Image (cartoon, rainbow, N blue to C red):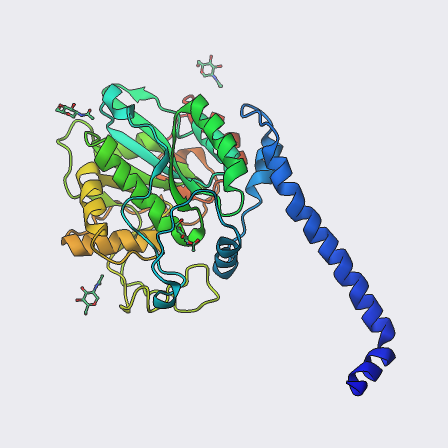
Length: 369
Ligand SMILES: *[C@@H]1O[C@H](CO)[C@@H](O)[C@H](O)[C@H]1NC(C)=O
Ligand SMILES: *[C@@H]1O[C@H](CO)[C@@H](O)[C@H](O)[C@H]1NC(C)=O
Ligand SMILES: *[C@@H]1O[C@H](CO)[C@@H](O)[C@H](O)[C@H]1NC(C)=O
Ligand SMILES: *[C@@H]1O[C@H](CO)[C@@H](O)[C@H](O)[C@H]1NC(C)=O
């Protein structure tokens, strides 16, 4: 005791400095933490205010352990407690009771029409500016003659600001009628639940769709080229079809340092079955229904794209190769003629998308066929 006290006295300047720094840091953190919910509860003008939307988006950071802590510390409003006892399950295990409730839904979308293609776009509740940019660019629902396209945004409940963000989301939903939300916490680890919600939605509310595409919100997407090159509306619909950028013989990452960490307890095998890369893949709607059914009987894992491969494996269905270069899982700099002959390019945020879109749409400059 005495020793420690003497050491502290000797180190007094250091200790004082430490206390000062800690206090400043604490104040800074406390301020940031306090400001966000207030900021969120401000009324939002969804048509404008991109800066505000961007501020909201910067809320998210990805560290699965942090996410778990957040999940624990925040008791979100009115969520069903469906967890099996924590002692018997790994914290990264996915809880999939098959009956998360819809908070926002568009049950009548497919009564009005029979979409040829449904785009299911993965977003988080606070991704206001991304959704806005997508509606103005590749998510814009034009009807190519005989080809109707439906674009919907999938989301869960924000782990910390579920309640204040819900009002904004409801407002946005009432304007655009294109948001589907279920009752699970929207964390990186829970991404698979969002894809499964999409498969469930197709099964229950849009069984007459022909094709479905799951896409991330940070991509460039060339819908026209995909429809003409891969889906070919003039041909009979494909069955048991899934294509994209295909990964074969990949292994689960067993290192906790990665965002894509998959513990042995969650997925024991050394390799994944072949699967299509998450940023964008397309499937026939009949397969969406089969995946939704089979997912009820197998253990859900936290990598949504690998999990789709596991479902196909279970169903005894193979992925279909697509021509080389259509689905790009890395970034390529924009070049109009190159982009007119591909389907997906990863890593295009809202600003860049809006910036390149007018040029991409401009049909004057001809590209070699
Ligand atoms: C799907 O198509 C069938 C037959 O064409 C029709 O009876 C049914 O109403 C359609 N369902 C939806 C949700 O459009
Ligand atoms: C995933 O969602 C469930 C249901 O909301 C929740 O209990 C669980 O904590 C979430 N998982 C993570 C890692 O956030
Ligand atoms: C995992 O490995 C087992 C045993 O080799 C095999 O039967 C099963 O099909 C594999 N599962 C997947 C999803 O590859
Ligand atoms: C496209 O071509 C038309 C006719 O050739 C021309 O009038 C128009 O200005 C062009 N638009 C752009 C954006 O270059």
